[in-house]
Length: 187
Length: 142
Image 1 (cartoon, chains in turn red, brown):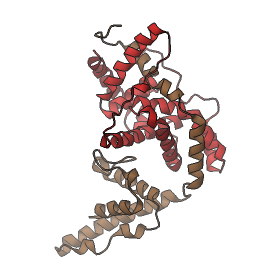
Image 2: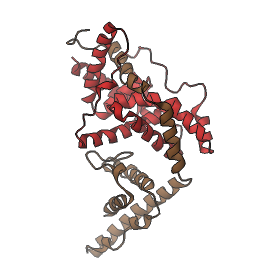
Image 3: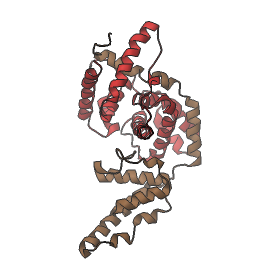
Image 4: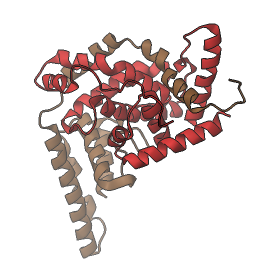
């Protein structure tokens, strides 16, 4: 798994987020909108993977950006903006999950599963994604978030560690435990 | 791949990259951007908000410690109910009070009040109004 090619890193955009952040802090509202457009889909996919139902997805994404912009003064560039955003998104998703649990709503929506591809591909891939989604629900929150940040978002351990306020070694351990448990759970 | 076969590493990663992708594609990014900028416009972050929150954290923690010390030295209960620093926070908005609770959580460690979110199994801070948030702060003072 360690030699597997990572997907395109989340923060490899040609124009740095730092410039947009500075512009927004200087009063440029469109800079905030551009940051939302730039990162909303990755954030939506991440929180959907963490169990947010599709019906709640836009609200969770919106709330995450609001919390992020309000807390931007505390962002010191310890990780990329998107990684920091994903960590906040994980907290917002957790809040949403608690509300859903109190209202007896099933937290994981099967509409998060990708339905693209040929019928054969769809059957094969749909099966794997369904099993993964089911397995992720049984992991601890930290294992689930580390796994998604690594396997879905393509982040390195150092980046994951900075976002989740842990060490790269601990992030690596959580990832490997997550993979091991997922393999057991999806058998 | 059959249903009873374990997923290998490659399949796990492929599945992870597909998980939530279609739902994310259906998110109306422009609508979200518009909503976010509108909310920010309606309630912009205060320029020195973090300073006010840091000062409130110090006041709350210091006030709480002082009250406990007085109670310990005098050996009588009831003194702590005479004054609450939380009552001096009437000028903080609900959003600032939530940030204050999150900051207190950071200073109080894993057993605190919940970081950016509420405590495990506890009530959701995002659903409380300013009055209720002040009541939570008062309980933290002892």
